[in-house]
Image (cartoon, rainbow over all chains, first blue to last red; front, side, top):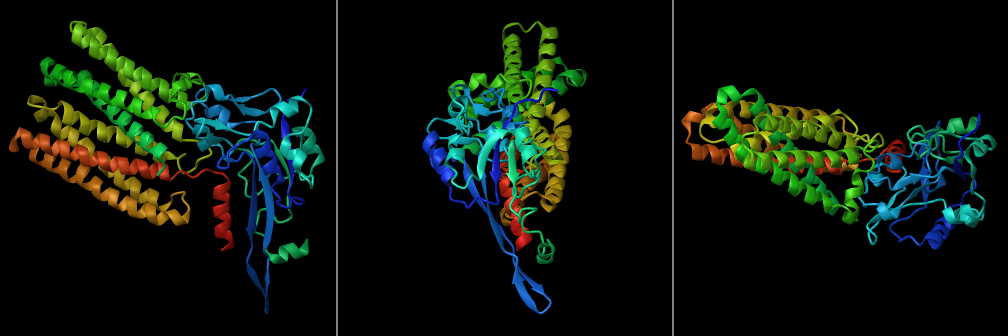
Length: 205
Length: 294
């Protein structure tokens, strides 16, 4: 059986330091305005003080998540766009055909990853297109090339899934079954699900 | 509230009023023709159809204001097979076109009653499909605060409530008042009952961040106060007094006041609806985490 081609991002949360080089490289390459970040780096924090018999210990944690469009296998933005401006290529990349976009922002409402960004100057939606020009030249996307810690990568989704300790659910992202995002995450040890482990559970690991 | 949402609030409310009114005209024409008589029904249609058409045209113009590139607006019907937004826009066009054709035919070829009837049924069906597709636009599987039965109830209730009051304000006069004012006010009072029930139940289990709950609760209370006057006190007074005991001018004044106050209440309600947007995404997860860890 031939497998449908689908490119995907790989993100290693355990080695990301949150330096935002990926974000800056994306901005340099794609020239998006400050209010329309195509790639964002989130810091997920949590934990509190826990009483263990006669003393207190904390289970605080922090980890990062670098997120752009996940070029979902079932992209809801493509489904809801009234003008068919949101399109999915044969290799699975989701992009906006800006010449036909009406700027209704319905895709912005629908996307659970806040990927489509509204450009007020153009009056149209913009989003990560996986650096289409670079991909077509067999080069990595700007964000992947800029990651000094090699926390970001890309490749064929099924190959990445086979190579990685693939975690389906990763806090704070929504259920993958909703849109089937092409984002393969090697999770941080505290991210399953974030902040809900007790300190005793962590110790027994 | 974002400026972009204001045009959507006005668009949805005006379209629902127009469709509600169209449905009332259709019901009267198809089922009460014999009781009311040909002349009275024709009079109702003659006064009602221009109002429906004006409401639809104004709302379509308003809907363009929230677009970033309105010049591309005609392309919005291209994804009819998959996108409910495309369907909503298409059915708005179909409803406007059929209502417009009906109005033109009635003015220039009044003898074609059979074609007029079919056109009226056609516009009512298009109007119903428009309301269904409008509801489905907001029932996104990634937006749990909208993707529930309350969106269906709220949009249907607004259609019937404002449609009935607009029908009474624009069309009823003389003989038609005596026959239709009580059934119309019954519908309005029933819709108020649904509104109150929805507000009481939905307030308890709404999918909203805790920080926003108080604001919503306060706004809901003030809106319900307005709704009680517009769709409760005045319609009850009109129902109780009936057509004969108060003069026509006072009846007109009361109906217009009820419509104005109810319109205000529904605009506030729709604004709250848009403010309740909460995507099943990163923001919700962070709220959940905030609750877990504090």
